[in-house]
Length: 135
Image (cartoon, rainbow, N blue to C red; front, side):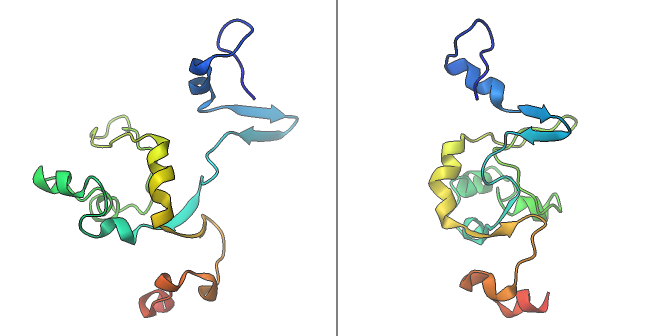
């Protein structure tokens, strides 16, 4: 569904207007989100040297590792993508185009969706480690 910002026809600038669309039908709310919204991935690949495009740049500038920082610095296991600076927070977040996710996401194992119950045997092989089983 595309709603023109002005006039009766749509153009490419109207796509940005759909970033946070919600449609309420009776008591149900439908919100436009990315198909991977709330998906859980293993980002171990990007914690390795020379894998994340920003690892070397961050290290050279004395900044935290671009992926590890979410847990190491912010003590947060959520990675928002694309990243946007939050009011009253340091503007250290890079905003990447969604095509970057499309290009790199095959490198990550999908573990499920936030709130799902996933059986240990259903996890990808590289995640079925003793440390995970003990947790």
